[in-house]
Length: 301
Image 1: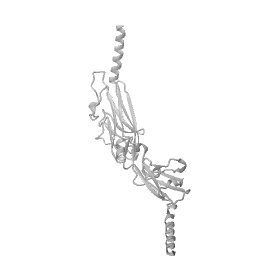
Image 2: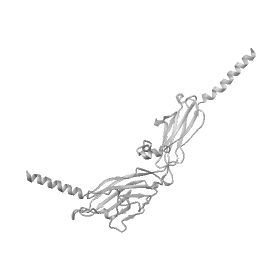
Image 3: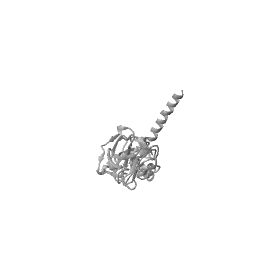
């Protein structure tokens, strides 16, 4: 019985020692969205020998944790990749320890970067992609851990959307035919037609046109509306048609809370068109005719 307990304690001790010595990635923190021109901080929080620095701002010597001889695990390198291309490397034993490589859309600020974070200056649309950090240890086990997340750079439209179509009076049974075109943006704008504040959801009335691609990765979206005019569409002889452009359903729903507050007045743009019923235009002439008839009758009497 005593031997069994001793064996179990030995196994637990070995597992504990291995856990202490192992390299572990705690988390990777990459902003989900950034506006074009903003700076971005990419963080890779790891533990080496069961220890971690709180700031990630320690110099080279702090990448080596001092345990007893034979229990020391040393950081070999930290590498960052965008879509599989390496753009930043931190090697404590190198002089200097930092090195960056030319990758489109990437501009590293070395002074603000270290073994646990990379500071990107002035992101562009080409900065959009999947970012991966790779941490490698030296002896005794040469272990490597990785983590990745996606960053999307946003360009807000400066104008639009615009409604185009025949601006005329409609009668019941006519086909209301309109096109809505968004301003240039990235990612693409999602367009929705509204009639009197009710979204048009029936796909039989909607036509999704091909997106137009412009320089720098900007996109223009277009949506067509072809719907029979119904008497229920008019209130006091007027139908109110709107086209709303949302940059992304994720932003609209506020998945990124900070970004959602900033975009509350910018991520949704709309154009409005008032369509009048031809029946309304007949009211005035008929009224004038009736008044004229009454006046004639009065004069005759």
